[in-house]
Each structure stands twice: as C-alpha cells, then as structure tokens.
Amino acid sequence: MDQEQLRQFYATFLDPHAKGPSHQDAIGASLPRIEQFEHPEMTEAQRAFLDEFKEICRTMDQAPAPRAPADLDGRHVDYRHELNESQLQAAAWGEGPLLVIAGAGTGKTRTICYRTAYLIEQGVSPGSILLLTFTRRAAEEMITRTAELLEDAKTAGKVHGGTFHAFAHHLLRRYAQMIGIDRNFTILDGVDAQDVISLIRDELRVKRRKEAPVPQSTHIGAAISRSRSCEIPLEEIVRSEYEQMVPYLEEILAIKQVFRDYKRVHRQLDYD
Image 1 (spheres, rainbow, N blue to C red):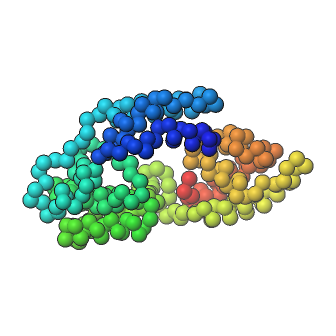
Image 2 (cartoon, helix red, strand yellow; image 1 turned 120 degrees about the horizontal axis):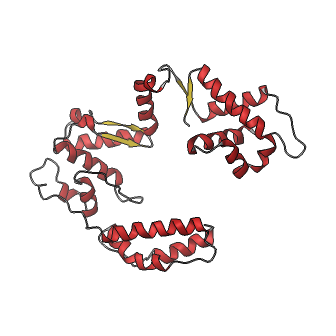
Image 3 (cartoon, rainbow, N blue to C red; image 1 turned 135 degrees about the horizontal axis):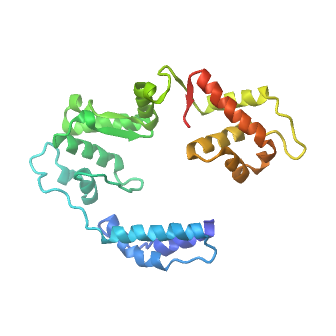
C-alpha cells in the first residue's frame, strides 16, 4: 500500500479509544472498524492480505483469555507482585508456543527474564532453555538479570543465550558434516561478500552496453542475496527489481555461479 492507503487503513482500524486491560480487548474493540475498511485502489493481493488479517482478528477476539496459574505462592520470585497482568500471563504460560506482540517500553526483556526464572523454578533444565536476541549485549543482559532473580548465577549460567547468528554458527560447526559442509569453514560478512563479487565482476571483464552502465557490485550482490534468501530465481529478481541490470543478465548469472564456486573452493559461507 502507498502512504495514503496506509494512513486510511490505520485511521480505520486503530481505535485510539480502545483501551482495555489486554491486547485481546483492543482487538475486539477495533474489529468492527477493520471489517468496514475499504479502499478503491486495493489490489487483489492486498485484499487477500486484509481478509486474512480480519480472520486472525476474529479468531483472537473469540479465543478465551489466558490466565496465570494459581500456584505462584511460595516461589523464590514474587511473580504476582513484580509483573503486571499481561507480563504475568506470558511469564507463567503453560505448555505450547506463545507469540507475544509488544511495543517499545512494555517490558519485553523483563518478561523474558521472569519467564526463564519461572521455567527453572518449574523444574525445567536450564540447559534446555534457549534465549535468542539480536545483540550480544542484550543476550548477556537476559542471563544476568535471570541470575539476579533466582540469586543463582551457576544455574542461570547454564541457559543457552546469544544472537541468532552466533547460535546458527554454533549449530553449523557442530553438525556441518551432516549437511555436507566442511567444519573448518569461515564466514563472509556483507563487506567480504561484496569484495569477492566485485573481484569476480572485474575478472570476468564485463563490457559496458550502450543502453546501460556496468552494474555496481553492490547491486549485483543485493540481487544475489535476495535470490538466495527468498529462494526466488535470480533472473526473476533482476527483471522485477533491477531493470537497469537486465542487459547484463547473462553476466550476472555467471557471477552468481562463480561466486558460489569460489565459496565452495575456499570453504566459505555467507549469511544467505
């Protein structure tokens, strides 16, 4: 959707007066407004997305509200006193997956730490708990705060925590041979991968076309990356998103192949 469509969409379904004790109440109050939303320039794909969104909201509105367990007394951590209702429901959630949607300043990290402490107090082995986040600092903070809650650094230290990349790196090192990867691989970050692609492009001596300049290595790398991460053919990515590179499609496909061979020969992986 363009900016005007988005503005109307949000103005329609985000009811500023829908302030309930839980996210579920807000969904219920906003649902009639979502049902009424209409925009003449919506595409079929946008309508399909909106229909799916409406169905999810109906399901959430009809679902019974979760309740925190009653057996929270006598715990080392005073969960009832230190968490609000929504945080308590998340921290003391029972079996099965739970998706929590929360904005800035709502106590996400706090809730995760209390959730970890609750699981450990429930008898869950700390070594079977995994905390993933986007920064090393945040991961360390979660472990530290959990240890402070339990007053047991040794137990909390057994919880696995780290960034998504670090955890994936650990798994690849451990199980590399099972998926045909040499365990002694190195990882190319974005800058390294860009340098290799630039080198390959220059080595292939890509000649300039009259209708377009030689594509920049940053654009070639971005197209290859998107193709890999989204599992979409590179040719389709170039034609739909990098029209200026279409005259060089044959060379770009060759660069992709050489880049893949280069990584294999040098036992290298990139994030894609």
